[in-house]
Image (cartoon, rainbow, N blue to C red; front, side):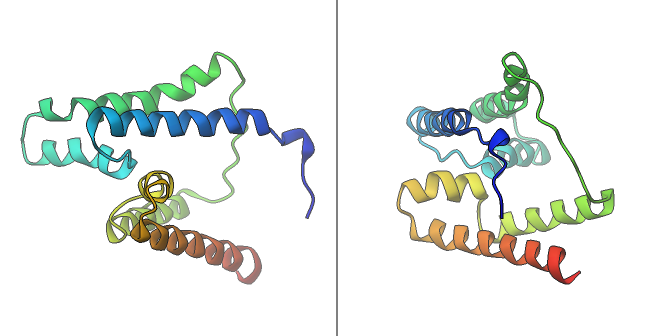
Length: 147
């Protein structure tokens, strides 16, 4: 294994981690809710499906807006990162569906359990993080070495 030192960005990574930590702490302090993206994105969708007013989900909609605007704000200071997708659309759709199923089964996503849950020392979040990290390791191993 070798490290691509030209792509090593500890200061940008530290700034990103601090921004995520600050955003989740402010969301918790301001709304009394965990900043789990699956729950934040799912709440307005559930309201729409139930034909309920979206008024109660202003905070979620603002958070989603911030998620959508963040890459454009990044673009003000740095170029877009290079993106390479080595699989076809069928594999991407299958992966998305599997992630969605995992989010429902685990009652939350990586941001809710990994960022917020672990910082609150939640045992349930620790088990979920170990499960999805383990599944990711196994998936990469199988796809890179066995398939």
